[in-house]
Structure formats: structure tokens, C-alpha cells
Image 1 (cartoon, helix red, strand yellow):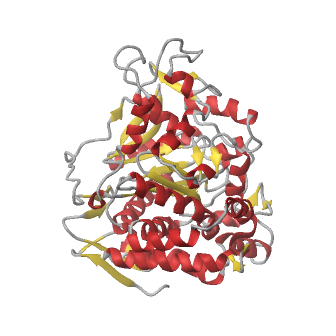
Image 2 (cartoon, one colour; image 1 turned 45 degrees about the horizontal axis):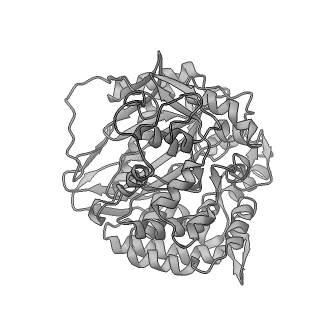
Image 3 (cartoon, helix red, strand yellow; image 1 turned 90 degrees about the vertical axis):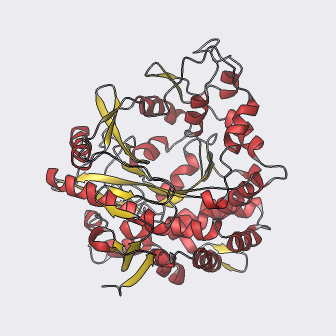
Length: 509
């Protein structure tokens, strides 16, 4: 057992499952508390919930609901779309940390995928026991919401928590602990378990169930037309990501460039997808490799981010030309796959003649763009594989330490400022297979990762919240250069005797 380290922020309310996270005893102050229902009472939130309320029903669509039919009122302009992104700027004392993670659910006795009927029972159980509100699409429950958090289903039933925007990593990790406790307590009663890994190690696409969500039907039909791995991405990948704020366009640009350039290092540190259909696939992060051939129009690196003059306007121009998937009207999805949002903005969308988009349409469209770093009214770091419990808190710690401390952000920017487009592209292509052992300039990527890790650690120290312990989940990887995937492969070839089924026990939440 790892030695226990006590960390706290002012108070004495112990949190977490058994109060522990990877050897760290968590304590929160300022009236914050964590129980089975999640993080509550943090500063600046103050949202209460009536005691005894049962989980209700949210009469809402899975995307942002439409506000009318797109006709009438002031038509949106390109300026409005730019202003929407710029409205994300906020002062540093308002910056928050939002963490999202996906996980594979499976039947404990057979290691087969969960059926939708089992998922429905799980969602209903969470709603009844822990007072989440149900999100419905027609007669189907397809998600849950609770005080800034949401649970949603990816196309193949991957279970996702989108966390609330929180002030500290202690709150973030407590939120993860609370969620996993809730899911585990309900799932075990119906014979289900969850594993943290980046790519499904056992099932084929054909064996994977399809969730009853309208947008996924449109994507499932469109994806094979534009890339080799679209269906694999939809049905067989899991990720963990962190969403972070900026205070100005200049700050956004610097963070975007640092995040995009260093995303291959995050991919390597969290590489955790070396198996496909029961055998090694030749990659350390097959999930990351998949994104190289999903849809070149909406994924991958974004060289224009590093060009002079990049800002909110340039990103809007990029997004306008990313082909659409759908528009949501009158509780129905309208298939717009391959059509132009720019045409929609001008009222020239063939499937909705004369209609122009609402701001909700723009918000929905931004969610269908999949680069390694994505801009909304915040920045999403999207390059890491899903992983076990102890690493779900390490990713937000890594990026928070780098991007929320001015000295560390500048240090990282100085490191990547002379990297060429060719070098960045090379890392993006080689890291999924070679991890931290990719040769880079006069050494290995591992050596750059060590410098970046120190910046992240120092940045967390300067934040003053005793958050450095959350980097423990990746510290050994940084030191040795041995990725989680390489550790799994060693187990597979030796201790597991070539039986990939053992990975479900190894990575069980």
C-alpha cells in the first residue's frame, strides 16, 4: 500500500471512497463536502437541492435544445459566432476545472457488452438512489443530470461523466470518486462492471450494442464515407479530458498552442489501448491512432493555430467549413451530414430551405468537431486514453499545473515555440506506436516530458492548494518512460499467458 499523504484546504471534512485516492487523504474546507451525491457547497456555487426529492425527468434533447425553428428574429451573423467564443473569457478568479471521462461497461460473468436494457436499469437505479434527473429521448432514458454534472451514453454504451466546473483538483477528484462509488454500487447489483481503458480490448464493432440516440444513427451512416476508423471511434474508444478557461483572446491562443503542441506528450503519458479483439494491435495508444483516419475535415492537428493572426475569428472560419452532422428541430434530428454550416448561416441549407441557425445550432455544431484540442467557450484537452481510477485525476492535474500558472505556461510556450509543423505532425503520428520513446531532436520525447512534468508540478505548487499529489498517477511513467500500455503488454505476455480477458480485472473500477 502506498504511504498516505494528508492534503487539505482549510477544513476537515473527509471525502472520497474510503477517504482515499491513490494514497492521498482528501480534505476540503470552506463549507465544501462530498458524499454519495457528489461535491456540494463549494464557493461560488451555493446551489441547494430540496431534501428527499426523487430523480426527475429533464424534458430536453441530448444536444442543446432548439429555441424555435430558425425562422424569425435577428439572424445570426459571423460576428455573433465569434462573439459567442469570446464570451468565454473570464478573469482568473473565475477559472474552473471541468473533467470528463468515459469507461466501458461489461457483464461481469461473461465479459460481454452491456445491453441497452441493462444500461437503462443502471441509469434508473442511479436516478432513484442518488436523485439524478433523467434525460429522455422519446421513451428512452439516455442520460442523467445533477447540479452541473451529467452522465451520458456514447454510441456503443460507453458511460461518460461530464463533471461540473470546479475550483480545485480536490473537488475534481472527489467528484470522480463520488461518481464511481455511485455507479459501482448500482452496477454490481445487476451484474455489471466498468473498466478504464482507451480502446475496447475484446469486442468487435459488430458485437457492440447501438445506443438509441438519433444523432448516432446519422453519424453511423456518415462515418464510413469519410474515414477508415469512424465506427471504431464511435463504438470502441474511451477518453478522459479536461476543460479549462482563458481570460482573453491572447491567453486562449497561448494555451491553445501549448495544448496542441504538447498533446502527444499527454497521449504518451496516458497511452492505454494496446489490444484489439483479444490480441496486441501494435500500438500503445490505438485510440489515438484511430483519430488519424476518422474524418480529416474535423479531427487531427490544426496547423493554422500556430499561424500569425490566429484567434476567435480564424477558429470560427475553420468551424464554418467543417461538414455538419445534424440540426435538431421539433425534437427530431434532421440529417445534414456533409452539408455546410456556412450555407446554413446564409439560409441556403438544402434540407431546411430558408431557415437560418440559432445559437443552439452553433453550440451543437461545435460539439461535432474533434481536433486534439477543441475550442468552445473554454479549451478541451482531448489527447488522453481512458484509464483506471488513479489516472482520472492526474490528467486535470497535469494540464491545470501547466495552463493555470503564468510561469509554467510561459515555460511550456518557450519550449514549444520553435517546434516546426513537421515536428508536431511527426509526434502526432509516431507517439501512438512508440510512446515516450519517439526520437526528438537530440534526445527522446521522454526527456521533453520530464521537463514539462516539472513545469506542471511547479505550477500546481504555486497555486497553493496542495494539489501536487494528484500527479502521482503519472510520475513513474514520466521517470521511466514506460507507458501504462507497455505495462499491460508485459502482463499479457507473461503473467496473463496471452489471455486478454485478464485486463478487465486489472482495470476494473
